[in-house]
Image 1 (cartoon, rainbow over the protein chains, first blue to last red):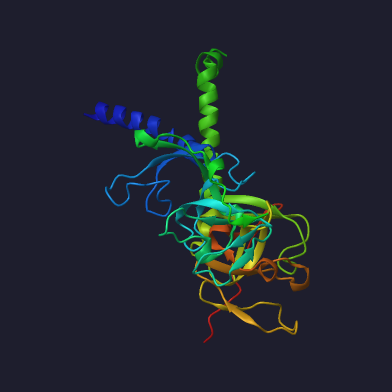
Image 2: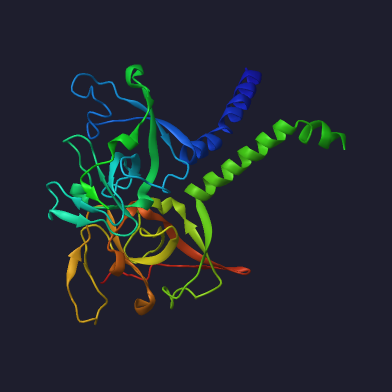
Length: 168
Length: 164
């Protein structure tokens, strides 16, 4: 019995030493995560109204805050709730003039230095029209691949989605 | 000798893995526990010197957890790629002055949900929320809990006290 406990704890500690490298990898290189909510409907979670299944996505974290482009699907820390990670599409970069949607108070806005304008594809989205332009420092990653469901699996072709509502 | 080459350095792959695991563990501690950083600049002047400051930062206060008005925090500057150290003057719901007192403009705003208002102690020489507005709490890296001096450590206390 004692030998069993000793061996078991030995293996447990052996596996536990792999946790820090895993956390490092998930923070700085790549992470596989489920997308929840309808804010990117119909691009992500198109089955939102029909089933409880969620899309599984690959989020690439390396140099996430560098070379952001219009159309990219990014994950970022929610400016309203710092413990939440949100996924939206970049509509405008710094210096762009955006034609906003309600409930934003002004009809157009110039995106300030170091900030981006993010919006969800769907109607049920609390995005920059709700909390304004966000700092690029909040960005944690880019959604590069859809892994599941199998039918839509593949690379996220974000460059086909650059919005026409922003003017550089 | 046989201990070194037989056990510790015997297998190059095993040694590399052990070093990598150790680095990852160190990173975990520096990211979620405590970290140190140099502070340069005149913006916090009576509290921190212009040069030669090393700060101990509690990363357990990351994303504004348990941060109170009056605490000195390290934060990611929202408009560029570096980090700064400032004092928290307002938390969500608080009313703060948009400009420095005595600047002739006494307009105020309410700090929005999930944000905070940070200002340097040296008002004329500080670029802070008066310039770029309230910052999201998610940009706060941690609370500055002390200064590391050669052979001594000075705690940084919150100077605010509750009124009797």
